[in-house]
Image (cartoon, rainbow, N blue to C red; front, side):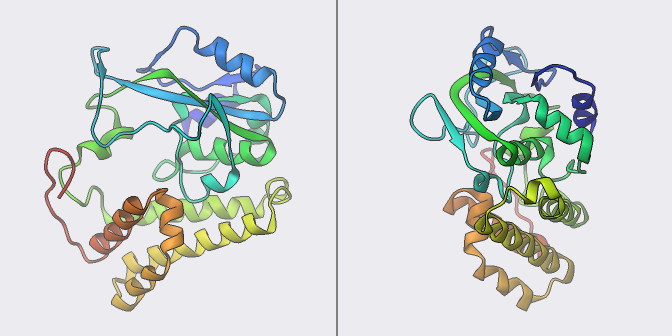
Length: 264
């Protein structure tokens, strides 16, 4: 991914990730630099986002919620939160040089169909140091037709991609989590419980992959016994149910049109 290559070329102690069409609040760099500079354990800091349209006007978009976790201005997000999902957009992040150094030493992963660079930085930061989230919007995220990261909010049918691409994304997720278990530096930071959670997520995605590849009804029924993993990936009961439905729809090629709000 191009962002990994760009990160390798940086030479500062604190590196900010920027999307070319977003707008930063004027005090974003000052606020985030002060926080990350005064706590050596903060390896990654993210912020809230607000939304703007193509012309820069503030908007609200149904179906999109910014992350607002916990009470207070800043909160540590534990490693467990990132297993199986990428929850914080990269455009809100700044990272320490140690994350870049790890990237240079151990290389990046192909995550363009799945978790993205956001997940890689989040996982590495939460194991080498700490991931912190600032409960303050410092980025205006632009929403327009070319913004593929929010394309899910404009989808017209239940199925938004091909089974082949979806299966490839599952394979990327499996490889990414196996990377944690195989990397000597990262695995040395894992507790027994964290290692077990990663192993379960890997098995979960292998099962989901098996269902969409085989379209076997019995394999599909096995997914009903993975509520914990669905919740881990979706972070809500409603989201977990939607993931399960998506697996069934994709496996058996069930497609429905959605209304303007992205609902059946």
